[in-house]
Image 1 (tube, rainbow, N blue to C red):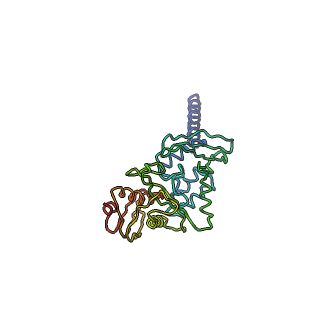
Image 2: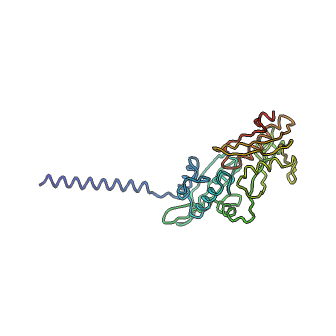
Image 3: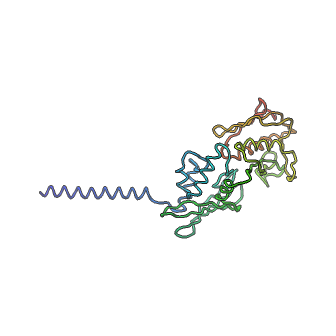
Length: 299
């Protein structure tokens, strides 16, 4: 009888330990992240499999963003396909070209339902701060908006694109500030700077093609930009085809480019490369003029 009682006591104790361990494991796995932790996790996720621009996992957006922002991001990604949508740069840094230093996520400030988490960093030598505005629903924090230091917000950008009644969109072409030595743009060969110029075009499903056409049609000394030059000048320059496969843009042109000296080579290459890489779906660029690569055609 004593043996039976001892066995029962041991069984109850083991059962209690098992329940406690299971509860502890569930508590650990279901622990809700703080606002600062959620922002930090988003940056880490962005490096591995970004929630932005992808069309495979709506759950990945819902993990970080409030319903309104998640809906707009999902709609933008699905409607733009492999071309650029409302976002023409990295939404976590509000930039297209990046050399990030002194990155820091600061403690959030606010109340039990709303908290603002500032993120500071330097990009290309310039200091920036963006703010993540988070709201709590049922004890779970989600990002409702991202506020940039140029006055724009992620929610505003997405809404404006969705609600645009003018049926236009913005693209960038890149021109050269000769001898600027990186003061007003990205420094390129021969001590020049590469400077982005925004153009509004009719909304299109192929903005990369439109951007390349805009570059080729821009005069060597464009009106309104007296300090900038376009080195894409020559005879009968036209776009034959543009394709994006596995994040590689292949641009095929007809005609010929005029090259006045060795400094024109990095200018021509940098201009078209930057114009193509403004779009998040493009990581590599290949350019052909006729049957030649661009490098062969201008040397």
